[in-house]
Image (cartoon, rainbow, N blue to C red; front, side, top):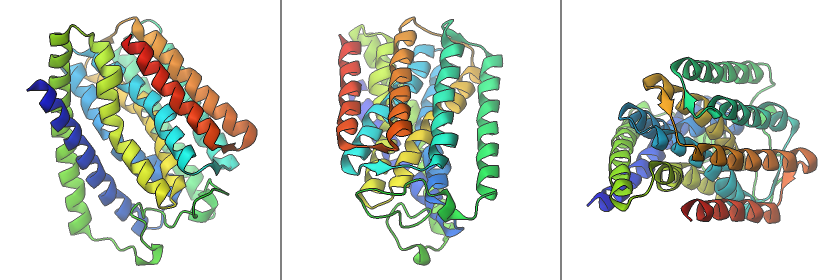
Amino acid sequence: MNVVLVGVGILALWLGARWLVEGAANIAGGVGVSPLVVGLTVVAFGTSSPEMVVSASAAFSGGADVAVGNVIGSNGFNVAIILGVVAVLSPFRVTETLLRRDVLAMVATTAIATVVLVDLSVTRLEGGVLAALLVSYLAALWISVRGSDGPASDQPFVEGTSTESKSAGAIDGTDPDAVRIDLGRDGGRLLVGLISVVGGGRLLVESATAVALSLGVSQWLIGVTVVAAGTSLPELVTSVVATRRGDVAIAAGNVVGSNVFNFLGVLGVAALVRPLSVDGAVLGGLLWVGALTLGAATVLATGRQLTRLEGVALLLAGIAYWIASAL
């Protein structure tokens, strides 16, 4: 029964996050926000809401390993699997904007999280600092966008194999001129999506923890694999759909924004709910995520692009880590 409930929880998370993102992206697109900003904020935070709910719930119930393992596993899944899939589907180039502001922020937050977790704990004070850093990043992003010449100037992808991004928030591929805000419809999607995410997140944590205990598997392993992959499904589905429909900016912005949000917002809030003390396995996970993040950032910085071959390499790295963790 717990295995079935894990599946139900993942399904609720996936559907809920999709509805949440569609409603939020439509509203954002209707007011003329650039695809990159939508990906970094509305879409990234929306698809990361399962991680927030799961980690906060796990922290509240004393499952620190699940809470932290979920964050680290999700970030590794984002860089290795999701970014890899996006590159395989549509190799892309980037501009200085994404590199200097957002990829650098992703690398910096990974380093900060590593420093915080090196003693295998996160205090409430450290959680508050992480949350404050997220607010600072959002403020810097807002200032940067207001100082630009408009949505087009913040478009990070100057070239790709798929068609150009169609609209700021048109994750469904609609014409930008046809985007209209329907508060009743889109607001309803937001509300239903949020309820599904909250309910699915709680169900997933409780069921996955029960399964782990019954099988003698550590909470850390279940958090960094099953729970992390389950809560990252919204990011995966959203990025694949966006990439196939030409919105590569939303897809990659989703990965970068989600990782920043997870390490600063999710980990910070979880520690504020309850100070975290975790298993030593967290250090190996952090090294893996750090290596993936630094590797992806280096490739982008040197070649200004991510090719299909590099995307395959990221996918293989992610799969290899999970196999090693299970063994």
